[in-house]
Image (cartoon, rainbow over all chains, first blue to last red; front, side, top):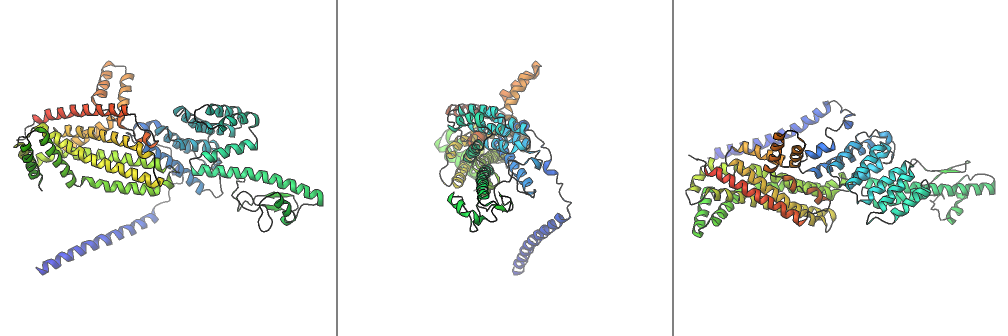
Length: 307
Length: 278
């Protein structure tokens, strides 16, 4: 009886041990196989989609919302991977050099699967123009056709036209969006601004301010914030240029250090650091180009986009 | 407790109450108990794990769309898990009784074949109801967690959950119908085809309109009306956008489903009544 029990226990222990050791071996073998596997094809990420939006919707069997989420997340991962593989810091509205050829089909499929899904339209309006402006216009227009009461989509399409310097078309889009019940009053103001003052810094500021307020996607919000910083930085550098000119008129030379004009900067309420250097909107000190009467962004540290 | 004994005892109790309603209730109760004993509801654990992982990690992947993704994922999983239960448990409801020969014990009592089928059907519907309600609560809790408070989407998902449940009731009836005359494997396959074609109903109709041949037009129009239109019960995507179906739409869809279920169960009873178990 005791021998039988002992045998049973031995059998249980042996089997449990076999499970643990066997699994550990499987893990080690898998890790070894991973090292032997040839490197992944770097072009695989750009492999064309097997399904277009309409086919995907047809075969979705009522799971179209979930499939749209999947394509949306794929779009974000696709852009994210490309940005990570780029050595320089790039803004999401200037990704033209990254060869994002799959982005338009991915966003198109996501919005065909779920035409009410607003974030992909926003992403198409912000990111796609640098890649393929016609696709950006087509997808945003598709969103307007599917959601004629969504004033934000008119804002997005107006933004695309504004970027293309087609201020008339941009004005028309803001005007059409302004007529939708619930649209904010600034849509009507933008309509007028586009026609009269489309290329100005004030209009750009207004657009990015509204984009920052309305953006649902964090990357878009971040881009709008950085563009606002850039506009503020342009204004700051204009002031600094005027200060340099005044200084040169008074002393006959350009300042050699920030200390020389620090009192004027403080008087103008421009934030400065401990060395007296003015700070850009990302709280990084401007670099003084001594002898040139010019201040520029510290491209290594500043969060303000250079282009 | 053995299934046969349970049914027999329940039927004995039901007999004392005299009436088809009590007999059907007894069979339904036992079908539900059997499903619970077969650990059908274990799928809820998987569902909870899925939602928990989604609620915690999906925010980072979806670009701030975690609420939409949770509703899409939660309700799609509710439908998918429900479809698997409806098909794989549904096709075995009758077959298992025949295979184990417990059906002889059941029919030795004054239980009609139609009562047996309806009881089995209602038992599985009760299992699915528990499943769907728990999953709906799970999605609501996930939304509460993600929003860190009350989310208006919680009120809009429930009409979608109701429509999913009605779709599952329809599919269960179809599975039971096929299992009344064919093997479980074939029944599962046929029910799965009905699920797929049911979601292509609109295409069947447009195909019928676009075809030149009168015969083909009749065939596809016939298929459109013969097969259940399951596309009417897909309200997951609008629910994720905070849109609920109108009460009229839900009523009409439910009425269509109940009429269709009645027809299917009547046809299943007709076939099952003529079946020889010897």
